[in-house]
Length: 407
Ligand SMILES: Cc1ncc(COP(=O)(O)O)c(C=O)c1O
Image (cartoon, rainbow, N blue to C red):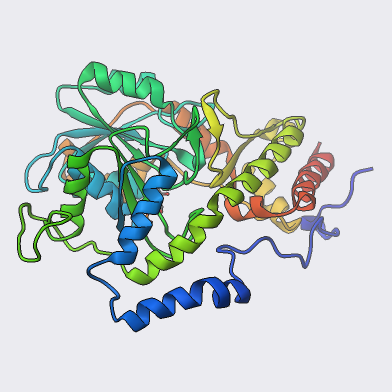
């Protein structure tokens, strides 16, 4: 006999139990690891320039990603703008050409490109891993195309081998939006090291965070210099204070954030491993439930970032109940979920508004896979994956309970 669902007044699978906090904070860590370093910055009276802590953190992050250079910035959005500007050597005043990107992503992927006076072509995703579809992107290349901006969505690395081959064939640059993919690896190499430049975010939801923050990684010295100029009013990394070989802006970050991130970076790899272990456990169980498609890991993924655990819901296996009803039932059982991006980014009204006024800035290719994923996806956020095996068991139990009641 099926159990009464919590949404119908039954006992929830999970009640009065909290999920893992994010970010993970505790008094002891503050007192022993973070506070002494914050205090040292405060007492040094050096909270901004010359940016010693920011440079230290940038070096550590370059090491972590296996790149030669990294530049710490205030936001992930700035990191994409800086990467676009540096990789294409744009000053931001003239037409920067077109950049092809995915239509299933956060708004900043595209707005940062438009901000640099480049136009955007939105293309479809691979229906298995939700990252940009290499075939769709290749067929979108025109004479105006200058770069491909991939997004390692939810922590799943895009198909960089194929994408880099396409880029080479057409003489294009490649940039990675790694905002959701700290620590992810493709064929044993960290994201951010797989293209001309990688852009990371340390915004509060991200797997490495200081509330706000961003980073550009690269192996190319000139790109590094141009990112630095973008960040630090046009200066050279070791140039004089009042010399500006380029025009740049002030995107210098706070030293306090660098200190916080230095400490948290030490824990990132272990946390990524916990998320992977929990996600693999969940997937092994969920793939046995008809109507739930767990995330797919492509063969090149040697480590998933698991910023998001993205599954798909098929209502036929749940008595025809809609995804919204399923999500309400799950929430009532104590499992927090999100439906994720509601529509292809090109259809968001902010983007439509730009298109109406400046149609030459946005090109939209057919995106049936994006449409489908927008209507079927269910996300668990990364903090859920930091929980215990019992937490995972309760997610599975809630889904089985709901299916039992509805079918
Ligand atoms: C895919 C993607 N790109 C870019 C960003 C922008 O990062 P930020 O919020 O730090 O500006 C985010 C995160 O918010 C993101 O998820």
